[in-house]
Each structure stands twice: as C-alpha cells, then as structure tokens.
Amino acid sequence: MAKKKKPTNKIQRSISRTSRPSENLNSAHRTYTIPDWRLERPQFSVKQIHVGDEVRYEVTGDLSAPVPPIRESKYLTKQQHIELYRWMLLNRKMEAALENLYKQSKVVGGVYFGLGQEACSCASAYALKKEEWLGPMIRNQGSLLVRGFAPSDIMMQYMAKAGSPTKGRDASSHFGDIDEHNVVAPISTLGDLIPVLAGVALGARLQGKNIAVMTYIGDGGQSTGVTYEGLNFAAVQNLGLVLFVENNLWGYSTPSDMQFRVKDLAERAIAYGIPGVIIDGTDACQVYDAAHEACERARRGEGPTLIEAKMMRMKGHAIHDAAEYVPKPLFDYWKKRDCVARFKNYIVNVTKWLTPDQDRQLIEDVDKQLENDRDFAVNSPMPEPGTAAPGAYCENGCHEIKPKYGVPTVRRANNTTLKRSEAAVHLE
Ligand SMILES: Cc1ncc(C[n+]2csc(CCOP(=O)(O)OP(=O)(O)O)c2C)c(N)n1
Ligand SMILES: [Mg+2]
Image (tube, rainbow, N blue to C red; front, side):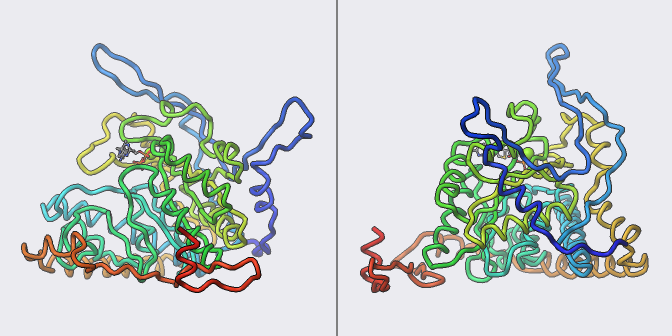
C-alpha cells in the first residue's frame, strides 16, 4: 500500500471554483466546469421502445467495461475504512432481514430498499459530526444506522410495534429524532426536505453556529420546484447545506434519460452559483471524501454544495415492484460494481487491512447483532388500540416544543445581545 498522502485542498479548490465562470467576463462566451471524480464514465443510454401495445426500455452502449478500482481516500484512516465497511454490511444485511420479515407477513405496509446504494447512504452520513443534522430519504436506512438508530428501531417501525420510533403510528420510514440523533423525518413530498434542512442550517446560523446539514434527493425528485427554491435559498444565504443528488438511474419506472436533458445533474450547481461535483456513488471513498469536503465548506460558512452520486437502484421502487421494466443487462453491469463487494475487496485484497479471518469475524458479528435485533423487534408488543389517538394532535399544549439550543442570538447595532422577549419581536 502506498504511503498515505497528506490531504491537500486541491480538489476542494476545484469544487469551490465550479460555479464560477472560468473565462474573462468580457468574453462573449463563458465556460464552466464540474469536477468528475469517477474512475470510469459509463457510456450507455436507456431508450423507450414500443412493441405493439407494449412499452419497453432498451439499453445501448458499452456494458462490458472492466470494474474500476476504488479511489484512494484522502481523509479516511484505516480504522475508519473498516468501520464504514461494517456500516455498509449492517445496512445491506438489515434490508435482507426486512425483506424476510415482509415475506413472513410481519411487516405492515411496504418496504423500501437502498440495495446498491449503501456506500452513498453510509459514507455520506459518516462525514457528519454528532451535533450536525441529517434529513434522510426512504432509501437512506444506512444513514439512519450511522446516525445512531438501531436496526431494531427500523425493524419495529416497519412492523408498527409499540416500541418503534413512531409508537406504531407509521409503518414506514417517516420518523426522525430531534433530541438525540439530530435526524429530521423524511418527507414523502419529494424535494420538501431541502428547504426544511436549509432552515435547520439557518437556525444554526441564528445561534451563531456554522454546521453541516445534509439531505438527499433522487434523480426524479430533483425536478420539483421546491428543490430549486430550497437550494437557491441555501445558496443566497450561504447556508451549510450538503445536498446529495442520488442519481440511481430510475425515478419509479422512468429512466433518468427521460427525466432531464442535462448530461449530469451536478451541472445544475452552475445555475445556483454553488460548487458541484460528480462522484461514483458505488465507491465509498469517493462518497466520503466529497461529503467531507462539502461539510468542511459548510463549517467554514462557505455555503451549500451539490454532490451528484451516480449509481443504480438495484431493486424496484419498493418491495411490491419487481422492476421488470429495467433492462437486465443494466442490472448485470451494476451488479459487478456492487458497492459492498468492491469495498470488501479493497479492504481485504487490495490494502489488506483485514485478513480473510478478520473479515469473517466481522461478518459474523454483524449477523449476530441483526439476529438479536430482529428477535427483539419480532417479540416486542404491538401498540394498544387506545394509544393510537392521544398525542397525535396537540391537546392543551401537550407538545411543548422547546428550542434545543436556546433562542436566536440577535445583536443590536451596538453589538449587545437582545433580551429573549426583544429577540422574538425582532424576528417576527
Ligand atoms: C412531489 C412528488 N411527486 C411525486 C411523488 C411520488 N413518488 C414517490 S417516489 C417517486 C420516484 C422518485 O424517484 P427518485 O427521486 O429518482 O428517487 P428514487 O426512488 O430513485 O430513490 C415518485 C414519483 C412524490 N412522493 N412527491
Ligand atoms: Mg432515482
């Protein structure tokens, strides 16, 4: 293994420059660049074809390219690589356990999977500090694990158990925790998390803190108006928002080739005047490094970053969707780029940071943890019917929402802090 390079801020600088025109403003043409960290640039496209009354998709392009290596991280230590690998395994195996629970009719409702996207979920959240904030989407169950939710929390949530984060009132992914984990619950209306998380960053700013606040949007969801509004607001206010655009090639059953005309969604960063970067979402090192640099920018008060992570949704939209509309060669191509297998290969065979025995031990550990969590979740009680309504609506002030960090710090022109009552008026 080559000696670990000292981190430089070279890529950081290239990120920072992306939204700026690179030519003289007096020129009739301006050019912009978007850094692309990938070690391969897949060249294929998905087209819709009509066969009789049926609509099908066909993929064209070179699907035989060799799998690229993992790009060496500039920031992760050996120990962090191993930790991250464990999170990815836990994410992958927890979802497999959920699928089994669903097939045993123990799950109430559907299940959404992030198969193939574990590197993106885990390595992005891994770049946040404990006191920072995350707003996950339905596929980011790995991010929830990294933020401190137990697999049993997620399993109980899907089984609508009394001890689940929503006490059985929601049987899907709509839960967060503002007390301990600093996780804002996913919002199903695509894009709506973006202004909410921008608001969290603004809230922190009003407390005199610059923190990183991370959220996600899909290739489909990024077309919504609220995505523009939220990100533009974060841009003009210089808020520390880190937005992952998870381009997994499908928005439900629509291929991304039929959703937008730009070549890369990171190009949208130019229009917001913020840095953007393209990464391989199946390479945990690229995901972590991009997230880390974006978080560092946020902490320095330099504003938002858009990271386009390219990968593939390896299952249907949810468990009810067999994804038969996806051309099989596309699955075959991305299966070879499986993020967990590639990271394992990097750690066991390339860097040799884990021996095959240590790897087996780690996998056994993860299996054991999941077995315990699954047994706990399965054996825990369902809610009592009488508990369904109380607390769902605020009755007589039963939900006192206290500011977590105190009231905003607003300063007078003479630099003295306003009293709490004065500050409230001042902010109205
Ligand atoms: C504003 C809005 N429009 C439509 C939907 C219905 N819907 C839910 S998920 C989905 C597809 C999302 O695709 P993408 O954003 O690419 O995310 P992915 O499922 O691939 O992770 C759609 C259309 C919604 N929830 N919100
Ligand atoms: Mg998608």
